[in-house]
Length: 525
Image (spheres, rainbow, N blue to C red):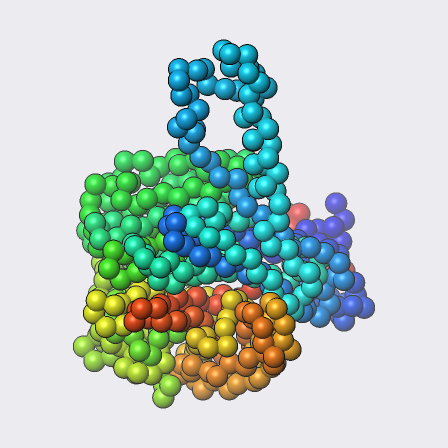
């Protein structure tokens, strides 16, 4: 194998490692403007996303949105399609009625009637293969709506000009019942490990871990639960099979007999890969999606706690055996401050700990910054936020987030009710924010902002001129230190402040590919 082949494989392998699955082609030296011996930064040319099943409520109203920003150097052709994942369902209760034999594809019943099951299955497969969302052009989002409990989980791929920065979101409003309120989650790439601090097996909560398998072979998954005294004994948490191209919701309370308010969920994929997200539903305070925390680290940032939060509950976990005293700071508009009475929080190794921080933000934008001494002990964390007065409260979750390295996008924004919160905890930064065209019309608008070191700002994000429908907000880093961001969607229904918060991870739309002339013969060892 020659060195050119090796260098291209190295670039593609690194890309696949960070995006779940993705691909690049050989770089065009002139298009990339690369120098001999230097890595070229190129747009991703293929990627995939998974969206969990939105709701089991018949009252749910779901909006799916898909978007790709305009990317310089991207291919001029391509597609971005989201389709329904094949759902595994129980046999029809009426299928064996009146003592007749179970019908099979292509066979007849005892009465000699030709079965219709084969035709029904073919129709079902055809429906599942139809695109739910398909982009027409970069820079313009598309949306689709689905009502009730039949809204499906989605599996999709994008290639060519649509792959770099491809983002999808589902937003669901549930009018009543357990989990009533606004629930939102950004669709994510498949992976092999996830951490979810902030889940629960308590009687007042109905928490599901949604597992979505995009591949043509089965995935095998282990689910570990950790409570206040360590790992919980589970009955069926090991070796869960997720069938090919299917979605599997698992009710956490069925995995263990122990009822605990605060639980950390660890998902480990033995074979294959899956997408994973926790849907946390409460009898009294609504519910929302709990995305996976950033990987265990000695420094975590939880961006964009709403300024009118009535209560903030921090849940944290350290996977190792070592205890740790976390230093807690709040990045406020004026800078980093230490919350009175919560200067440090003690975590015992392998045990989930929860801390009530009250009305932490006190009317100002804020982000939590958690630090272990010398960064030596890795931690995962998330906060549960309540808004509204007692009896009319709604909840949402903010996990520890990854920084925006280059670009990130939030979807399904509205002219009113959207808050973009940005923090730069380690140094000042300049960002560019672009409001896309609307799903039904409008002209893109762009603004630049300076974020002071150690602060969080709820910025007045641009809105498309002549907006019709929803739109995308894309944040690009221009200079300075690490930037973290989240987007809050809010509305009021019946006096209840519905809201949902999504951190903005980097879209990983660009990748550094070594120059073909680089000497990578070391890879042959």
